[in-house]
Amino acid sequence: MKAMQTIPADESIPLACIPDAISPADQPRYDAARGWLERSIVHREALPDGYALRFPPGAESLSTLADFAALESLCCPFLRFQIEAEPGQRAVWLRLTGREGTREFLKEEFGLP
Image (cartoon, rainbow, N blue to C red):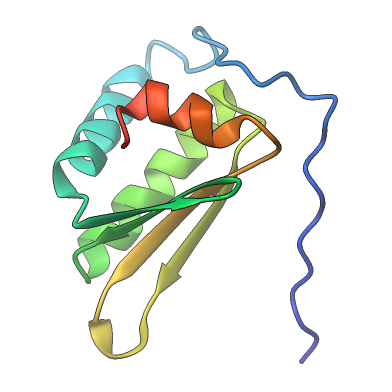
C-alpha cells in the first residue's frame, strides 16, 4: 500500500470565512455539528499550522466530525481536515490545519487557547 501524501496548502485560497457558503437548508445541520464539536472537545493541542482536537471515541464522534468537516470546508476552503480514530476505540482526533496564519484564525473563530 502506498503512503498517503499531503498536498501543500494552496496559498491562492484566501484565509477567510465565506459566511454564506453554507446553504440555509444546511445551516441547522452545521449549527448542530459545530455545537457538538465545541461541547465535546476532550483535549486541545496547538500545532504549528493549526490545532489537533481530541474527542470521545465512537461512531457519534466520527459521523459528527465528518459532517462538520463537509460543511465547514464550504465556508473555510483553506482548511485541511484530518479525522483519525485511534485503535481500540481510545479516542477520535480532528486536525484542522492549513497555511501560515491558520492557527491564529482558528484560535479566534473557535475560541481555542
